[in-house]
Structures are given as C-alpha cells and as structure tokens.
Amino acid sequence: MEKRLAILCTEEEFSPKIHFFDDLALFEEEIANNAWDTWQAFALRLRAEELAQRQGGEELLVLTELKERWEQVGLIPYEHQIATVKRVINEMHGRAILADEVGLGKTIEAGMIIKEYILRGVVKKVLILTPASLCRQWAAELSQKFALYPVIARGPMDWKRYDLIVCSLDTAKKEENRRELQAIPFDLVVVDEAHKLKNPATLNHGLVSGLKKRFFLLLTATPFQNDLKELFNLISLLRPGQLGNYRAFRRRFMKDKRETQNTAELRSLLQEVMIRNRRGPRIQLPPRRVATLPLLPSPVEKEFYQAVTDFVRREYRRQQQAAVNPLTLLTLQREVCSSSFAAAGTLYKLCTKSGETDGTRIVTLLEKAAALKENAKMNLVEAILSQLEKEKVLIFTEFRATQQYIGSRLQRKGIPVLSFDGTMSASKKDFTIHRFRTDPRYPVLVCTEAGGEGINLQFCRTMINYDLPWNPMRLEQRIGRLHRLGQTREVYVYNLVTTGTIEEYLLQLLIEKVRLFDRVIGNSQRIIDYFTKSSFEARVMEALINTENDAELSERFTALGAEIEEELRRAQTDRPAGFALLDELSTGENELH
Image 1 (cartoon, helix red, strand yellow):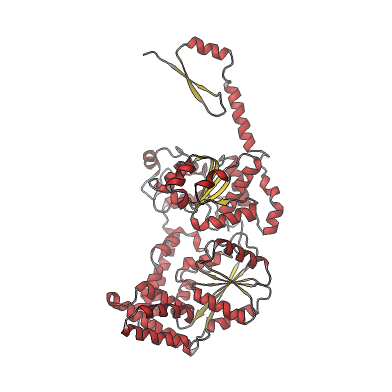
Image 2 (cartoon, rainbow, N blue to C red; image 1 turned 45 degrees about the vertical axis):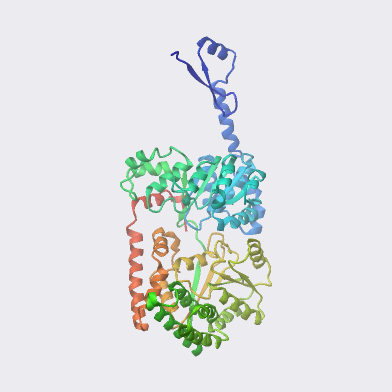
C-alpha cells in the first residue's frame, strides 16, 4: 500500500483541513506557490486573537461602563471579584470554575465576566443554566446590575431567537430542548450550582458536555463533597485532559476517595482552572447584632400550647395506630410555637378527616384556639417597630397564617405592610421587592420561609424572627438575606421566643452550642452536611415526644448539644486532606472576612 503524507492546512480560520498527497513533488509545488500560510503567519494570527480578547490590557471595561449604574443600585465591586474577573479572562481564557465560599458573590463575578466579554465584542450568544428556583434571580441580577436583559427560555423557539438566555437545567435537558441547544454554537455558557454535574451518567452532565461553547464558567461552592472523583469529573468537563484520565488521576493523586497524595502537584493543576475565594482578614462584613427577646405567653396561650403539645405527644406515641400522620404532628408542633392561627388551620383540616372520638379531642383544641384573638408576640413586634423610625424591617415567619395575622394586626395599627410568600408569581415578587426598597410608605415586609429563598435585601438591616425554624441552616439563610456581601451597615436581628415552649430550648441550643450568631455557619461544609442530612428537625421532635416534663426535655437538649459540639470540633480538627486542598487554593489576596 502506498504511503500517503498528511498535511494540516489553515485555509479557513481555525478550521484546519487534512489534505492527502500521493505526489511529494505536487506538495512542494503548492508550498512554492504559497498555497498555505507559514507557521509564523499562523502564530501571528493566533496572537492577534489573544490580544483581541485582552483589549485594554489589564483594565476592565466593565468598571467604567457600569460605574454610575452600580452607584445607583448600591453594588460595590470588591477587590477579590475584580481580581477573579481579570484572572478568568487574562489567564484562564474564559474557562474556569468559580468556587468561592457561599455568600462571596460568584453571581456578581460571572455577571462581570459576561458583561466584559460583551463590551470587548468577543461574546454575543450566551446561555446561563441554573436551578429553576434561581432563574428569576439571575435575570433580575443581570438586568439591575449589568444592564443585560436576558430571556428566561421555555422551549425550542427561544434558543435561536435570543442571544442572552437564562434557562433551568430541568427545562434544558428535556429531549426536544437538548437536541436544539446542542446544535447551537454558544460564545459563553455559564452553569450555576455546577456540582449537579458531578456525575457523568446524569442527563445534566450529558447536556452540558454536549454543548458547543467557546467560553465556559462553572459556579459552585462545593466542587466535591464525598469523593475526589466528583472533582475529577467537574474539571474534566471544563477542560478535558487537565487531570489526565481517571485511572491515571486515581493512581497519582488519590490515597482513597477523600484523601489526596502528590498534593502540591494537584493543587498546581487545579489553580490553572479553579478560583476559590474564602473568608479571611482582608474584607469584613459589617457586624451583626443579635438580641434574644423572651416573652411570657398569656394564660390562655399557655393553656393552648400545653394542650396541643399533649395531643402531639399522645398521637406520636401511638405510631401505627395514630390517627394523624407524624409529619403533620411535627408541623402542628412548630405551628403552635408560631401562632395560634397557624395551628388552628391544621387542627381544622385534621378535624374534617378524623373519626368521632379523635374529632372530639380536636374540636376541643379548636375551641381553645378560637378563644385567642391576639398573640403576645405581636405586642413585642409593635414595641420594636415603634423604636425604628424610617428603618426598613423584614419580619420572617414559617407559616402563611401567621404572616396574614401579622399583616392584619399591623395594618390595624396604621403600619403599611407588604407580604411576600412562595405562592406569588415571579413578576409580583419582583414588584414587591422593588416597592419595599424604593417606597418609603412601606416600612415592613412580612416574608415566609418559602418566599424568602434566593432574595437579596442588603438595603435593609433589621430583621425580626417571629418564629424559629427548627433547622439552624434555615435560620442562617434568613439572616443571609441581609448580612451578605454588599451590606454596608450593622445588621440587627431580633429573635422572639416564648418562654416555657420547645422554642426556648431550641434557641438556647443554637446560641450556646452551635454559636449560630457568632459564626458564619456556611463556612463549614461538614456542619452544613450535618444539619441537612441528620434530620435535625426529627431529633428535636424526638426530644419533645420522649419526655414528660421540662426537666427531662432539658436533659435531652443537653445531650443533643454535646453531640453538636463534638461535630463542630471534628469539623475543625478532622478534615480530610481532599477538603483542605480546596482551602489551600486560596491564599493571601483570596482570603476575605
């Protein structure tokens, strides 16, 4: 068989073609006729492309272009964010994992990168993939802070029609959408919550790996959680071959699934594609001042609380013979700590489904609830508001019935109130937040747990926790709506707690053992995992059910507190080397506080 010579041809820009020649003399003739560019010419063209991406040198166009807008909306571009944007564009060539700790502004960094590339004229077609719950937030952030106006895509007609698209991963990975998306050449693809791509066998990973993309950003605070293979998969999705194949990676860099070896070399490879900013001494959030305000329930409230608690204990202990689902009992116990109105709604539903014997007991509880026209907590809320002239105040509650009671009570007192909950449409949510921020006639926003997910309210600095979620992570997330990057004033948090209730024991546990209000709990992935995976609410409920009096309940919470203290100690002293590796990616200029 005659041997043929393969030659790369740059006839079209960056689209090499392979030509085969049987006749070497013909090949030499083509060279003599300058049929192909020289290597020097190709290198010059490549360099020109790189310089085009670095237009303006080290200076960022976005800083001057949006300076006035940022002053209007109160956005402060922090040093670590500016440094991250420069490094992604100038060193990583637009392909990077942004792995900042929670609350340090990954979305702002990504927005700056998108805007910078658009200003430089090297990006036009952009796709942002995010969990469905964050689509509206992304669209709002881009429009308010970056003068970019994306479309939230719903189906195949949107992909080619618009240049700036926000879409949920769940929508994008549907078969009819995936085919269309993977046929479109995107200039830039951004994936938020990118740890959802850690498994190559999933539809999420298959969708993103199949996209045509020039620049590529992955955003996640947790590049891996349980196995270094997750980190390998994420890096390989971003830059295939960066860590070799998995067999070579495992042999060279893994002692086991959570422990590394040859760590310095691995760290060096990660630094080429990943940026992780952490809290440290260089930037400080304003202090947060927390006041715990105990209050005595009225005699009627105390009687109602005790009657509901006894009912919950009795039904819970009946287990299989119980007339009420255990999850409903847990909800009822949390509701009675919030307000009699929240508990009354659940009691009414139970009454309509119960038999005669159980129904009679529930009717008795309903009668006690009906006797309560007001709750003592609202007296304290009104006292706090009377001392806060011209301050915006956010009131959090877990339950809509309590939200409605708070709103109606304040309206009767002549205090205009805005309500915010998970049943509202996305456009109504946006309008409500805008009105709360800009309209001085509305000093109070009453927000439910579900409604508060993902909203940023740095313009407000005062929060009242009308009731307490039974999971510390959700309480920290509430505070994080105000106490986050961009907040310029001290934050004040008022916790209302009714004495003689399980709420009192829970708050004592959070203050003394978790030290929730002295630390940013989001710093520790191990603690996040503990409170999300150990069914902490169930542990609290178990302590209530298996005790007969306050002394026994106190002992149970003391034991639970000791367990949490031990977990916190382990989080500080017993971290696998794989987790420490991520921390070591950030030194000096990347450390914030």
